[in-house]
Length: 152
Image (cartoon, rainbow, N blue to C red; front, side, top):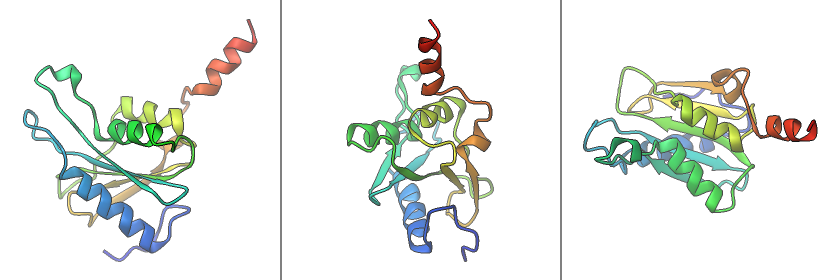
């Protein structure tokens, strides 16, 4: 696919690398129950690429989404606030996958509201780009708790 509109802060090569890594991460999914594979790639300010895949469990509540897997890896690797882009991919060739509500809130904890979130279809030929703020309007974040503690 010829990329004409890139997310803010990404070169064409970086966009292709983010896409490739989101698709690659999906291949690492452990999803024997739902068969719903998801991959995620976070690109950091130092141009590190952190991958995550969804991991299911027979005790369904113990599963974790691809985005939160990547977030945990990024944070525990020291990449807490310098994210340039987050991209996800699922298996559907027809539609682009979107982060669930819990993942949107988890992203909000560590990312700027202007973070581009790129949502790919299964082969990367289609994508949608939205900012985190567009995906999670009127959001609640860490600064809201700081404001509350100041007033007491």
